[in-house]
Image (tube, rainbow, N blue to C red; front, top):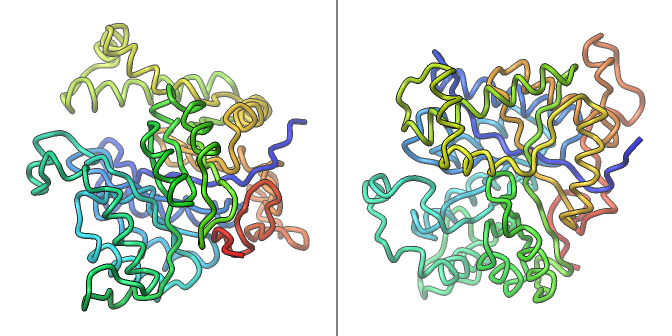
Length: 368
C-alpha cells in the first residue's frame, strides 16, 4: 500500500453546477468542508475569481466566514486573495476579523494575478500596473497583521497583531523567489499550471531565508483528484470536467453539446486546456493513492492541496472520502462513513502532528 507522509488539504472552487444557484454551491462547500474535517484533512481554501459563471467564491473572505462558522477544527483560508485587486489595509481588516472570530484557524494565501479576464480586471478598477507593487503590498499587509505598520498612524482594526499566517501562491519563478525572500510558505498551482513546478520548487528551496513565521521551507503543491469506486466512473467524471472547462474557458460560457465540446477539446486550444490536467490522479482508491504518493515525491512537496472537480456533489464527496481513506491519519474509513459507525479512539478529528511538514500543531508555520 503506498504511503503519503505529507498532509492533505482541499481547494474548493465553490462550483455552481448546471441548473444550480450560488446558494447551492455554498451549501455544497459546507458539506465538503465538514466531511474534510471529519476525515482529517488539514485545511480547506477558497480562491478569488471574478465573472466566472461556475465559480461562487468571488467574495472570498465572506465565504471563509460562512465555512468557518459551520466547522470546528479544520483550518479555513484563502487560496488565494488576489492582492493587487485590494488595498492591503482592507485585507488586513477582513482577515483580522476572521481571526478574531475563529482564532488559530485562518490562513491567508496571496496571489498577484487578477483572477479574471482583462475586461473584468478593468471593472475591478485595477490598473495594468497593479501587480508591479505586489511585493511591497505583501510587506504592508504583513506589517499590519504583525502590529508593526509601515504607514505611520495607520493600523488595521481588527487585524493589528493578529499574525494570520501568510502563504505566497504562484505558477512561476516570481512567486517562488518572493516566498523564499520573505521566508513564507509557497503554494504552487500545479493543478492548472504544471510546467514550472519543479524549477519553481527548486528555486524556492535554494533561496529560502528563515523568518519569524517560518524557519524551514514549506511547499504546497496543487493536484487534481477524481477518485471513484470504479475506474470507468472516474474516467467518465474526468470527461465531464474537460467538457465543462471547454464550455467555460474556450466557448466563453456558450452552450455546447457534448459532441461540440469534444470537438473543441481536439483543437490546439483544447489540447492546451487538457495540459492543465497534467497532474491529475484519476481512478479507483488504490490507483489514486499510488499516483498521489508518486506525485508528492516528484514535487518534493511538504503538503498537497487537492482539487476535487467532479461536477456532481456526491461524486466530489466520494472522491474526498476515497482519497483520505488510509492516507490521512485519524480519518474515518469509507466503510465507517457509509455505515454511520462511530470512529475508533482518535479518529474523526484533524491530525495535529505532521512529520512531513514544518507546521506547528495548530497548523500555523512555526516561528520557533
